[in-house]
Length: 444
Image (cartoon, rainbow, N blue to C red):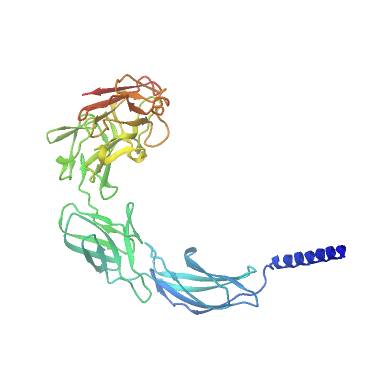
């Protein structure tokens, strides 16, 4: 009896295994999915959301998905996938992207229906596309919205008494039956669609002038920058940052134009010497990038090599950068460097392979605690460890990894601190080699 029961169990297991194995087998390439497109527009505009309706079925094979793709030429610019669990009617909407410099033409709407055996059926519909001819645009600023009138095909203007800076994005109204609001905003250094970041329009003066925008090529104006150094106009980096790269000579007078409140700006004495209302370059002759920071009201000045920010060369020329805690310009409270490499301070090259930074305790350097070091570049990479730099200050020590600071990091000697309000000059001398740097710290 026991043997009979065991035999029956074995037979049952074999049947169950065989049954499970059959269920796992999925035939490939069977069936014939069918698509009947019952509703799709005969034309559309860029920026539309176009509706479609299709009926789907197959020859007793379950369906899987319906993929809808919109092509401009050979590029897929929009797509969506619908799960088709049952035969029947499915509807959806697909967005027609609005791009710059795309002329009127014919797009392709492609429908791909797939069943569970991976068999596919495709259908395509040609869709003529045209660029909307908006009746007007709206310039939206934080305080007021301005109507921009149409003055030509795709061309719009606003003419009014305006401040010399106007920051806002442009919005086009919904156009046609299936249209959407289209927004144009700023992206790094140009206007793009789908953004509400303010476009930094600027004129040389406030008063009556025109702001213009073209919805075909995205050309916009004005971007008149009235800021210049030695007659060289500064380029706009962002709304508050403007920069210019210049070859400068030690002790030459700097002609700074366009900054109305310059007298209230913080001036970095390592780079610029101020005498009454005149300014003179104070670092060694070379190429520099001067960035006017209108938010913090000071000039960031950085040494350059060719078209790039300078790095330290093996012969000790180039640049030395400071990254770390307890130091910052124009003030420690408002702009501490920390370990954010983008904020690295470029020490002023003063000649003889020497580099200098001047700080005021309690203002641009913390009087009670510092933890920064010297680097070969504005970022991670080469740096000065304790074996490549020495110093003799009785207040500042150089970390070696065992004395309270990592190798090369500067700290304050236990029981000592900098005198609040006092000026200190740090000079790094590399004239004996970049692995034999000598740091001096002098209280003025």
